[in-house]
Image (cartoon, rainbow, N blue to C red):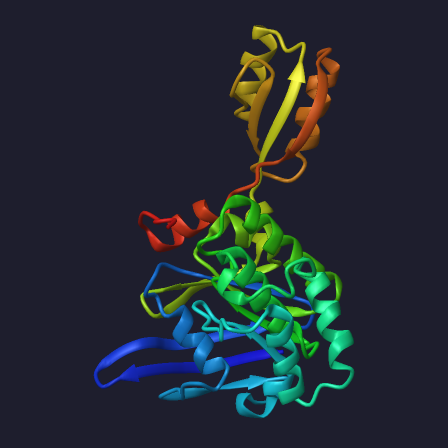
Length: 298
């Protein structure tokens, strides 16, 4: 869907983006994360063909970005609307300008999808921030694009509004859309994205599968009862088992088979195991380690 190769953007002597390589495959949702001013929006504008790179290239669907406008839906960070229209009038106008067939049916469909049917006839000047964001998503998906690019779609929304937008994104995933989601809200990226790229100081410093990176640790949390102090002391010496609370323990598997040996020792000792699972790291923890600094979530 998106292939960015060796991309650099420079304004005179200042590098805004440095040697960016990024890939978004079909049916993936990629979260592009970074601090404010890291270069996320500049990269999106280059991907969309609004800006030209100083070096490198961008391809969408295997072709140059400028040739794919009808295949891409875009929600900018700060969208401007003609507020004299109602939401339904605005989308209908956009559909007709784009040559969309059966405009009325498609407008009704996307308004229903984003939960705006009830307010479709209201003038947009009376819409809340959340309603305008919903309408922005509606215009982004109006032409049924295969690729969606959403720049900070959750910023400024209250928790209920964030959940609504998250549900819309999940519905887009069910429809097999590929999505590039630019955000500094790491917990939201972690909830809806399959992959991530961290941009820091104009460069991408880490990227990959969220599932692989956040669950790839050899740390395991065990919830078990019936472990005596004597048994715990023995297991701590053999397996370096740590106690978190009365029935919660932490174990790091150093070599293959250790986890199974620990479980056998617990069962043989009469313990009851209620839960065993990998310790999930948060994207925020990962981000802090990658960037070596404090993250400001605002």
